[in-house]
Image (cartoon, rainbow, N blue to C red; front, side, top):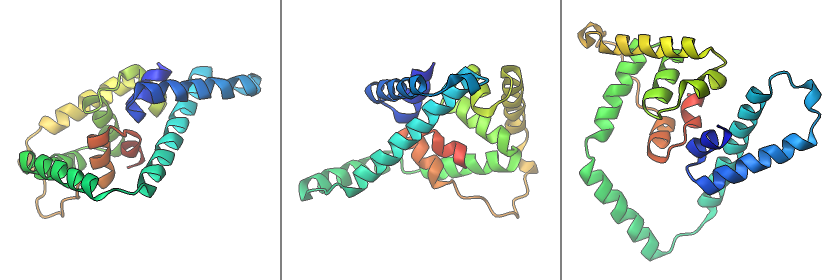
Length: 181
């Protein structure tokens, strides 16, 4: 379970295995008598270690230099993606506006993590500190709210922009950015 959480957060099996191993090494060095819920503690530790890994990776990537050829390859790849998905930004903005208008913050978070990132209810209950049945009911209610007639939405209100954090999470699989929003 810990490895699957780390894998969903960092995106590679090797890194996820390293993170879980580091978590267990730290676990063996601490006084576990004070910890009341071992499973929740380990899940939170893996999540924190994954966040630290991603932060370090982001810093390493930002400091790397790119040669002219690599720069052209990156631009070509970006242009081809934008050509074939030219309206994905508009569609995502509209979907996010509907989610924002119809759902409460906890409903948005649970719905996105379950429906977009396909995180199991067992994992969601630990992440949000709610019972599995409660998480399932919140997601079910969120689905019903989304299916309601959208014409009831007040169009006079400014539409929230699709957050950059969610764009990054969607494109790179960094679900922790969604939780922060």
